[in-house]
Length: 317
Image (cartoon, rainbow, N blue to C red; front, top):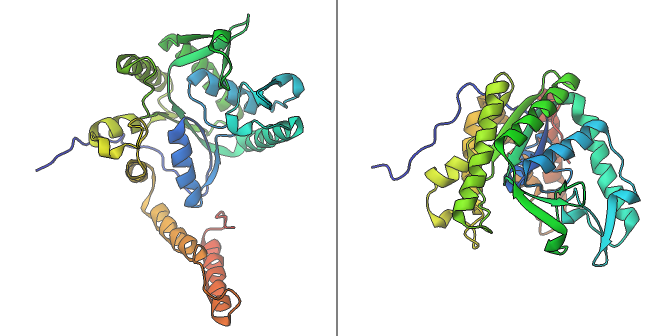
């Protein structure tokens, strides 16, 4: 007997390998998968603006990365004892103006430096709802708990999303003709307006992705993370305590399905060897200064050296 409905994974997806440079941006799925890719020694830059939720905030962040923007004081605002950027997650906010600017610009410079060598851009859209601020109705990425009266909240249309990303993808491909793009929709539910409104929001994102795949079938791909959580894991035991976010078990399951879709047998073998080294590095000795522990560390270094001889693009701390 089979007690689940399996979601068919896309066929013929280009592989993701350890030799490639990856940039992941968007909602919590990008953060979760990005951290797992990092753990397995892939070359990743994950959310250089922090977690972003709507497609137009993500596209604006990508344009700033593409142009190599440098943030100045005029790009920030002071609220509740901290400096903030409306484009960045609260993790970048701080009491020191200099600290905020340094953190923002360091991450931006790192992301910009990867553009021409980047082989995969992985984007996760969370919601079609956006917040607009000011006379120019500029879409913000984060309200930072400012009064709601300062913003206008509305839902993006499929046409808006497709028009914006069609231009953006063409600009990226002009700079990097080999770039491949993977789109996903976050399985996390945004229930502020009720479950029906959340479904309409997710449907808008899915329809936008379908049109972009039709426009760019040679380099735009889709991974069904949203469908896997809703159909394969249709049970609240796979959710966190808030009943909205996937549980750690669900995230690991998504990672396994992601691995099936994108990793070759050789890549999985490298991952197993990296996992062995990572577990050894995490070992906490009873006697750190002993000769036995020094020999143990020497064996780890030897494993790393041998692995890097075979795969020189791997990085280890």
